[in-house]
Each structure stands twice: as C-alpha cells, then as structure tokens.
Image (cartoon, rainbow, N blue to C red; front, side, top):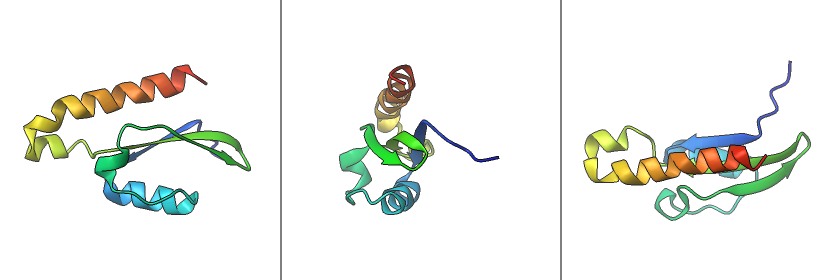
Length: 82
C-alpha cells in the first residue's frame, strides 16, 4: 500500500532539511520557516509541508511553548483546508 499524505509535519531541523531537499524546496533555517505552510505538487497530488521546531525544544527552552502551540494550530488549519 502506498502512503499519500495530505500534510507532512517536519519536526525539527533535521527533518525539515531532509523534506525540503527531497521536494526541492529552498533551504532556510528552521527559525525562519517554522509554522509556515508550503504547498507542493507531487506525482501523488498536492501535499502541504509544515516545518516545526521539535517539541523537545520546550524542555530546553520553556519560552518556546507558545511558539510550538501556534505551530501546531497551523496543522489544524492545513488539514481543514483540504
């Protein structure tokens, strides 16, 4: 069975780097692209990519909790727009 995601959330810089390279997206730092929706066309249809900070960042820096929550809300918006 083939997986055909509508939304891909890249959690952390490593995942963001891999996904951006895989789909030919312009490389940028996670701090500049987190929480933004990137729409791409693949052979499987349209896919939305949302790079996010890895949730573990909140354990190292509690000030990022609100940023993480806002980014997770973008996932909901992306799913609702499908």
